[in-house]
Image 1: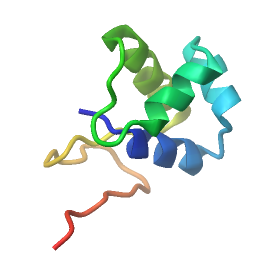
Image 2: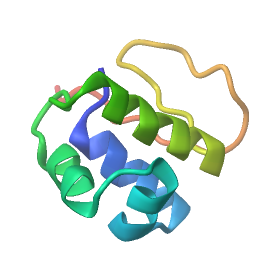
Image 3: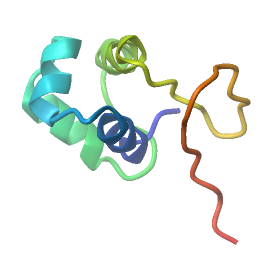
Image 4: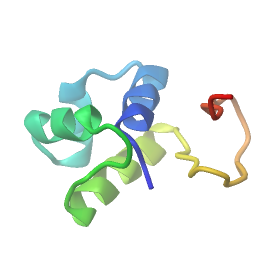
Length: 83
């Protein structure tokens, strides 16, 4: 599952404001704000979450699920589990 923190981090890597991500995904700014405010997995309509993930992918960010390998190339970040 995708977390609000991942969406914020992806947006930061791309240098996008929430308004720009909303435009790219075809969603409203309040929807983006609600998604990013989620602690843990984003609780949203699946279609809306897919729109955000697809918009970020088209802009150049790969969303990596917990425990999944990154199959792409280029720079990225992965939040490690706290010890």
